[in-house]
Image 1 (tube, rainbow, N blue to C red):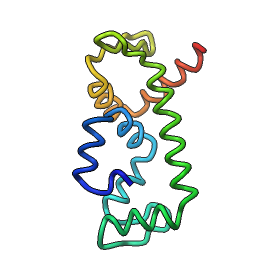
Image 2 (image 1 turned 90 degrees about the vertical axis):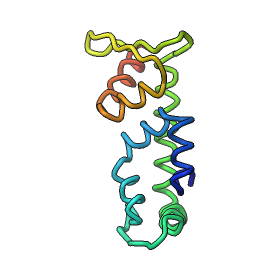
Image 3 (image 1 turned 45 degrees about the vertical axis):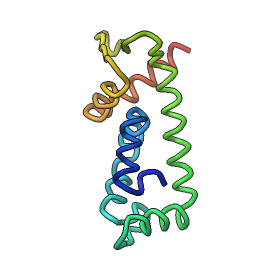
Image 4 (image 1 turned 180 degrees about the horizontal axis):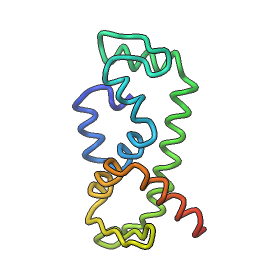
Length: 128
């Protein structure tokens, strides 16, 4: 799994900040559990991160696949909703206009305000 090492996590958060923000928003407890070398499903403790992730992926495959599919689906919907072809991202939420200079800035905002992700997706779905 790509978050198996701090270097890989840094690569993920640098190159795909929105994807990581969606992952943390939807499954932050599972990520925290894996960071603490504990399986988020059966609570089994491990000594190494690679062993923890290998166990999680192999033993709880259906749960892992569900997480991947859910995060991927929400991430794609978010990308469609933001439409950042201009030099900035503008979102209208609750009658308020939010302006972001980059996807990274939006990702940081989503991490601080997780409820915003669902609001963005609900607004996007309503407009379709």
